[in-house]
Image 1 (spheres, rainbow, N blue to C red):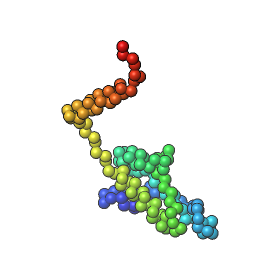
Image 2: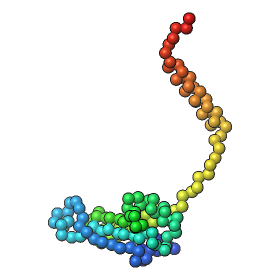
Image 3: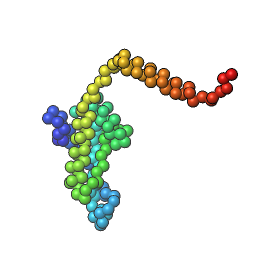
Image 4: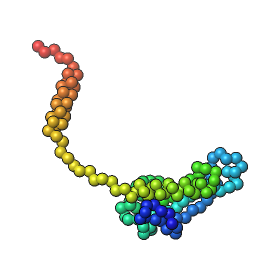
Length: 140
């Protein structure tokens, strides 16, 4: 079980991990050892997440969200497979915790009378400045 909060935990069957060789520097180690981890979370099929959380998670995941509804995280930060595995799980927990927060609804308000007057006055002044930019004509 992967614990997200006190009340929410993700079952192990929802997660799958695969290991592959990491790119970048590392000498001979990078060519021999599969240290990079790809953590796959079947978010769309998860019974533990509400539809609203799934929608926010999809938005937060961006390109990491697959067409099948899975969230794929790839980590190749360290040379240790165990550390990369832990980092991937921590990132998944952070993403889900961020998706659990419901955004506050915006309450529409009317602009104040003073702000309306200031806006109109600024527009009038700007219009006068632009009107003075015209060609100078012979007024006879």
